[in-house]
Image (cartoon, rainbow, N blue to C red; front, side, top):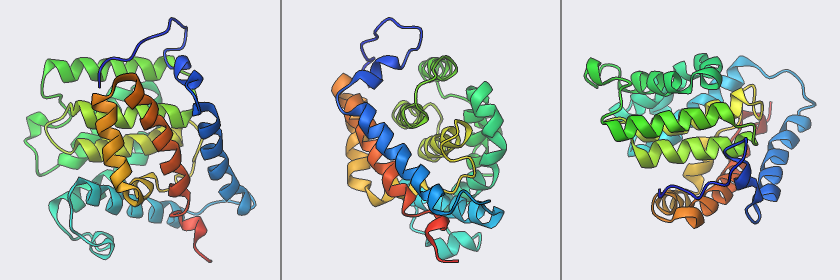
Length: 247
């Protein structure tokens, strides 16, 4: 993505909430998540529901990364290497909730290490492939620590940056989608991690891929389109939550 025009502000992302349609789209997406939780009477969620959400997310993320494994294979710990990598990320990601809010670069590195364990050279795990990637990661981390803008907006930026900059030598998509989920959990949108954002993106795959290209190549207009797309994907993600399943 071409560097966006920055408007001087104490919060580096505040200007994005002034873009046409963004405030209402962010509010609608957040309301969709909140409504699902209210539908369940704000009662306690259960570990098995979180586990199922993570499993569904692992499968969807793996498919977006090129896996041909079924969700049943993922559930059984089988499937191709991409699916196994996605499952490793899914299993370990929630331990990084505190880290994503205080040391995001460490969280990104750990997500890549989880994905690449046993498949990527040990010296390459969690390490950017070049100085340009390291610089963009550092800038992203600084932005995350400096902003108090809505979590869905922050998650959208984190996701797109990690995919399009591709700072690691492999599995950037898996890392990006896991980081998006972590931001939504850590910043209070989905504390129990029962929404499945990865499945929302898979359901909208054509739009997902085209809007990532727009983010990478389309400057401010592409960034705007990506943010609006992510709000739609979060709304769709609610439909795949285990909380929607009859109990």
